[in-house]
Length: 80
Image (cartoon, rainbow, N blue to C red):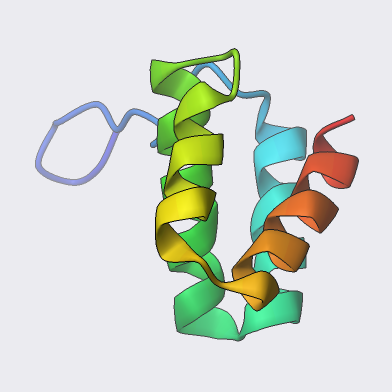
């Protein structure tokens, strides 16, 4: 609980904290603090919405960014 009495919920409750932290750290290491967090959040949101990974594939295809593709591939290695 925070001082206002509101119970805080983790941003991604369906992902084990140790795994989420490892993904965030790796993303920030690869892409910098701000962009790493943005990439991590977007990846986790897409995986939460669609565990098959189709939304992730669509996102990467639309972004058409080889560096983003490389970062996301490395983050998937952390997930496994």
